[in-house]
Image (cartoon, rainbow, N blue to C red):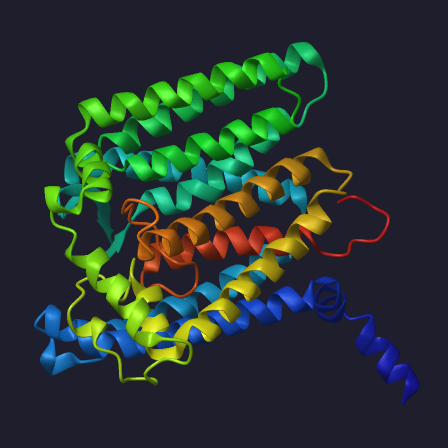
Length: 375
């Protein structure tokens, strides 16, 4: 009996399973399950908005399919070595960049933006895949310590960033461009960029935002609508704010919310408002605490890591995840202009689920217990 137990314990699957951060795995599992429940609740109301009365659970059924695809992706990525992750990162950057460029010519126009491309009958938003992929490429380029090679790689990464941001802003998707730039700048600084250059980057960032305000109508409209609601259509933000207030501490109860019947994006960008109305403020705080625990555990492992690639890539991935959560919640609370950012694992969307799954899968691989050897 004891020999059988030893054999099972030494099985590759068991070694891999025990090497994972099982607390983080549990949090991910809960968020995915709760996300399914939330989309199911929102789907009932959103189906009215989109005239899908005959298929009330249309979005819920699709979300189940997205989750079924996401689980094996996360598990597979978590088992990979660092070298294989680097290779996948480069492949994803190339593929997603070509897809982003393709959206400019054959993309699906949704609400005035061509961010989606249809592949094999499925709509895909390539920038969601580019988010983790670009982080991996940047980390690989900037992991070197030799000064001459570092500067060469710095300019290579800057050129790649410029190409990606240039194609993305033409969709247009300025919010994602800002995220690309912020995460890249932090990675560059952590890799050893002199502080004087950091100041130049900050000034460049301010110039980009000012330029976007003056030359991109949709950016100007959202910023002005945020500071002066009377200057444009603030219907969704107003409805979300009312949902937060009507939910109170304990919520109206699952399925009893009203906002999902009025919000076109109740299942995507504003699903946090649906959760707040039906489950209440206390439950929402609990969800945010779970996100916080996952991110804290990730940073606690990454910050002490001896592998520079893992340190830079892990920090960038965790920062992206943190920003998405923060921005989504702040938009719902009317603390930031609308950006189109979804809530990881909870909002509806195949591309968002795929991008988050890639991010989390890579993070689980980086935080695995690998013994003394840095693989």
